[in-house]
Length: 118
Image 1 (cartoon, rainbow, N blue to C red):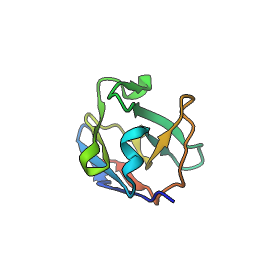
Image 2: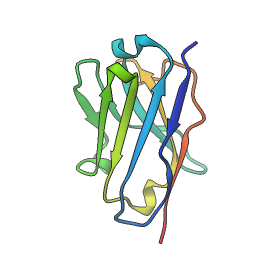
Image 3: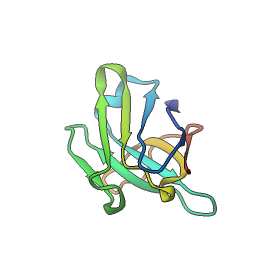
Image 4: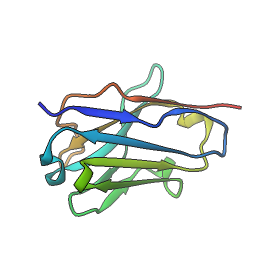
């Protein structure tokens, strides 16, 4: 069972930046596309951005130009650099391996809380 540990969240002002990290416990990490999801209070968990095993990326329009996903296969870690943060980015952020339909493949980690507020 692969374990995922997200970190790097916190309280940030609008316009600020945060960098999230997600470490996976298994070497199969490098074989999988990875995605960052977020879940705001009272809402469903949605995919924000994904990166393929070939480092190709796909992201939703709401974060285009502001968020950047990257991965370090040697460290079994995926990152999410978040710039120009907005209050609507407030959510718990999770990572997971994803299939071609962007459905999560592994058990969820605990997530990391991101709060954007002045």
